[in-house]
Image 1 (tube, helix red, strand yellow):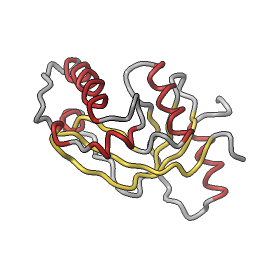
Image 2 (spheres, one colour; image 1 turned 120 degrees about the vertical axis):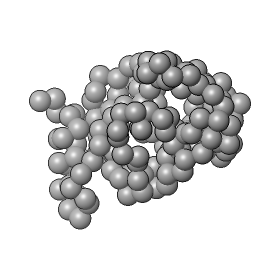
Image 3 (tube, rainbow, N blue to C red; image 1 turned 135 degrees about the vertical axis):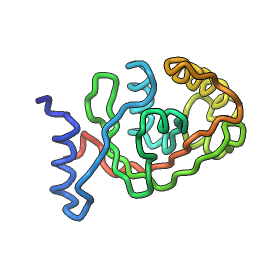
Image 4 (cartoon, rainbow, N blue to C red; image 1 turned 45 degrees about the vertical axis):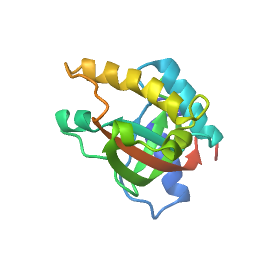
Length: 155
């Protein structure tokens, strides 16, 4: 198994933090390896401290929503574990009510709400189309904030 696997990164983290919960989720951002690389790097830089996902896809896939205190291992495009973050807040809001503050915390582009809406409409449209669904401005969005707690390059 690769030295940077999620399991191995988690095991190293638990040695340093023995009181953490016994569960984590590992995932990568976006639909492309390039986007996953870019966004995982923004997390490492401390620029990206939030993300957004389609509420409807959680329902369709029968997946639980993220929750405060949840540990997540962020993977790059090659599924290499880059960091561990802990969820600090979760809010479900209509797409057209996502705040400028949330857009800024996502850390992408010029960090404006206008930029966020432009790229996320395309992102959500693509994801929903894969499930034969259609984007609309009232769709529910899961806005998740997180804190970087460990980098894969830390001992």
